[in-house]
Length: 119
Image (cartoon, rainbow, N blue to C red; front, side, top):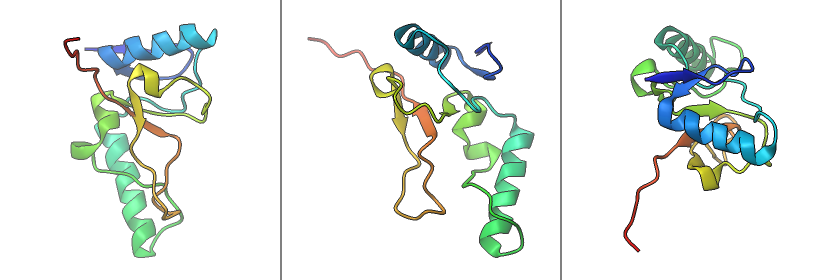
């Protein structure tokens, strides 16, 4: 299941949505999200643009994966420039950082479901 995040932020899987709503409460305002869930068609279009850029046949395009591998399509990724938000304590990690400027995406985070461990 997926849920609309409100405020024009798109959608996310239910567990990821609950985490985003916790972040909203902790910040006292809706966390800025450029894009969350993504359709397969959009993911494949982004991937085609990225491949064209890497092949030298298209303009710059951010790193992208095809729909079959895109966590955005599963509703468990966000793109956000709000770096002061409590992302990590709420289950979000940066998974697209790189020393290569063409590959580095400091705005991209993926939701990792917390694992309950016995005390």
